[in-house]
Image (tube, rainbow, N blue to C red; front, side, top):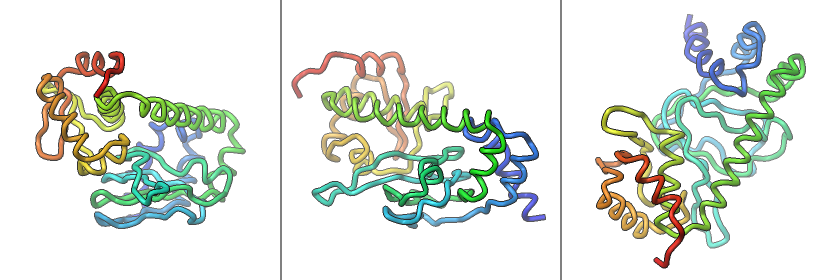
Length: 238
């Protein structure tokens, strides 16, 4: 019964995701049956750079940050993941070591699928494999866009970053787009390539411009068009 409940919980997330949506129902159910759910408490390390890259994970609940350490020994946040997000696709394809660290920002559950089970399913269904690689290419393009965004001035960088996070993790309602990351301003700064002080200052300016509102750890985009204008504005001296 517990196994059946787990499958019922996992299946909609995988079916709606382009990485798995191309698999026939029977193949998808068989893959789910071979995977398993892992639970992590807030602050738990899920994996470290250099660990075996033999599986990918689907986030079921909670928030996870993907990080690395730069040459100065400082943490760099590469991405924030929430329910429905997938991580580890490259590792299951090339079988090489993890290139980053993953840590739970809050109590989280992930569904783990091993390469030994996923790859045969994709090989048996070429159309699903094509969708898998197309989705993977989109993630690579998104990563390239983040690198490009980090060449902007601080105001544009924060605006672009908030729009990106709103698209990936925001919840739309009548007040705007609520971004709930469960991340500190220091972690947000590590994601944007800025110090905590600069992030705080830029968020304050965006708040004064009435394009965002801040409620505790949540950021609410109340004027998406206005924030987009700021993001696309020519860079200026800080």
